Image (cartoon, rainbow, N blue to C red; front, side, top):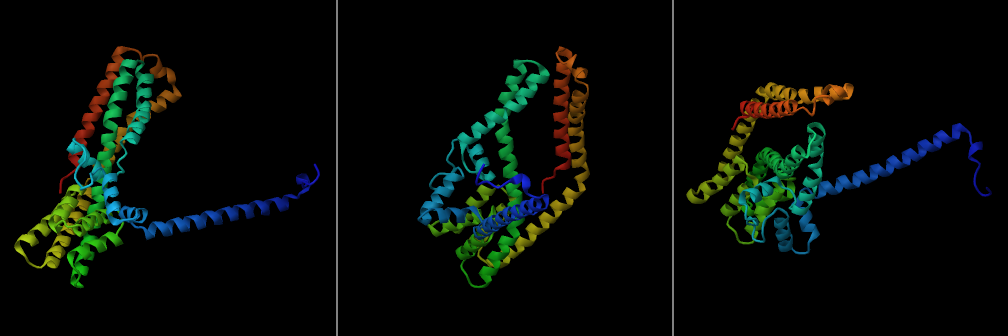
Length: 327
C-alpha cells in the first residue's frame, strides 16, 4: 500500500531500540504522573483538608465531612441504631449504605456458590448467603474500626507533642489543636481537625475532645479527654499534664508490643491450624475429584463437615481469647 513503510524490510537491530525508547517514554510519563500525585497527596495530608479545598465555605465543609462519617449536621449520631452508627463512625469509612449493600450482595455469592457446590443443595446455600450478606459487612466494618483505632493510638503521642510545643510557644489550646489538624495525616489529623472546627464554632474544648474520643473509640484518646476534663475542673499546667499523658501512652504502647511479640507464636499457630484443612481439602479435590465427589451427597458426610466447621470456629474463638490481652 503506497504511503506506508515496509515493516518487513526493517532490520531487527532497529526494532529493538525503538521498542526500548517507547518503553522509556512510557515509564517517564508514569513517573511524572506518580510524582504529581504523590506531591498532591503530601500537600493535602488528611481528609478534612480535602473537604476544605472542595467546598467554598468552612462551615459547609465541616457539615459535609460530618455527613460523610454518618453524623448529622450538628455532629451527633444520625442513625437510630446507635451501636451500628458508632461503629461506622469509628471505622472512618465514607457513609454509603447503598454501595455497601450492593457489595455485600455480590460478595455473598461466592460463599453461597461454594456451599451449593460442596453441600449440594439450595437449603444450605441460602442460609450461607443470608448469613454472609448480614454479618459480612459488620465484620469488615468492625475490623476497619479496630485498625483505625490502633493507628490513631500510634499517632496520638506525636500529636500531643505538637500540642505541648505549641502551648510552650504561647499559643492558645485551640490553635495547638488546629496545628495538629494541619500537620498530621489521617486518622488523627481529621479527628483533631473536627475538634478544632467545633471549638471554632463555639463548643467548649472539653466537649469537643470528648466527642473526638467517642468517634475514635480508643482508650488512649479517652485518657487524653480525661486529662483535658481534669485540667478544666482543677486547673494546673496543661502542658505538664499532656507530657505526662504522652509518657503514659507511650509506655502502654510499648507494653502492647511486648505482649504482641510474646503471643506471635500462638497467632501463627492459629493461622496454620485454620488454613491447613482448607488447603488440604482443596488440593485433594483438585488432584482427586472423586475422593469427595463420590460421598459429598451423603447426609452423614455433610453433617460431619458442618460439625467440623463449627468445631473449628469454636477453636479459633478460644485461641483468639488466649492470645489477645486488654491493655
